Length: 62
Image (cartoon, rainbow, N blue to C red; front, top):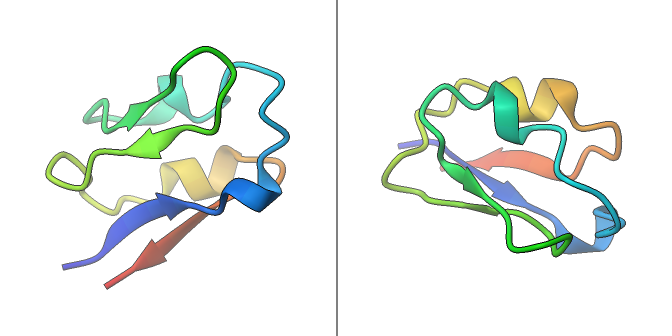
């Protein structure tokens, strides 16, 4: 099953993640301004996080 993940090196980690409000299952979590994490059990691989991240920090993997 496909699931999204974050490439931390692409995330500047200095702002609230712009993908958070776009995730329909609330699978993206973020502590402060640290790189967000994806809760694999909640991710439906819709790709919305990939579309909205300006740094292309989100990717899908099988």
